[in-house]
Amino acid sequence: IEEQCHWIRESLTSFPEPPNRTNHNAIYGPIHELFDATIERKVLVEEENAITSFASEPGCFERKESTRRWRFSEENSARLRGNGGKSVLASVLLRKLRWSTLGLQFDWSKRNYDVSLPHNKIPDALCELAKQMAATAMPTGEEFKPEAAIVNYFGLGDTLGGHLDDMEADWSRPIVSMSLGCKAIFLLGGKSREDVPVAMFLRSGDIVLMAGEARECFHGVPRIFTDKEGAEIDPLESHLLHEGNNHFVDYIRSSRININIRQVF
Ligand SMILES: O=C(O)CCC(=O)C(=O)O
Ligand SMILES: [Fe+2]
Image (cartoon, rainbow, N blue to C red; front, side, top):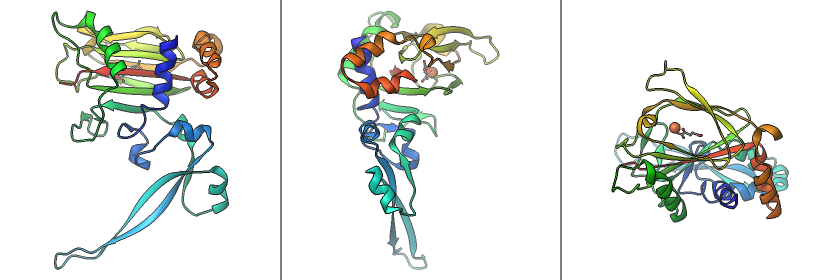
């Protein structure tokens, strides 16, 4: 339970920090300290800067570009300013956080790893856990090399559609997939979308190895349970409350986090 609480805290604080990217990057650029901003009831506010650049080549037109910058502001001052620019509550952004990527960055628009993007190594403790868990599913004598991880965040109603993880070079390497928070239904299908899937529950603390045949199978998450009976997170809640982490409790009561760790090459 203690370790689960640790990964929940990391998933909400350090994992979404730049240079790691999140689903919010495409719209707002890099966002720093979203979880703290939520606690402090901050608002992300757009500031418009017009940049005029003159093309040096003859025949080219003067180009006017506007760059948008977003930064956190105190809720009150954002309201007082009443600027025409856009603003969005940090709490709304946290609820809409759907993924962050660690290690080698995955480019969702191209569905590929983009090695040119700046990135940090996967944290050592997560590497160790993944290596330990992957060991039983590795070809004999070889060690799993964690190079990338995707953190998925689910709120009530969020789903992950049926998909294959086929962007890694060597499918003899497992994917180590850890569930945290509210219980979910996981569907494991076959190699074709037509195959009828097997349904199973994933509870907080469960680790799935997508290995062997299963590495090539469609899978998805159609549902999470956030009601008290369904979520099955009582021990987790008590531990977080005991530690005085009310904000983490508030989040995890209605959320599920999945961290899946991959060897890319
Ligand atoms: O949330 C899960 O349990 C599965 C996540 C997954 O399949 C993925 O990120 O590729
Ligand atoms: Fe997957």
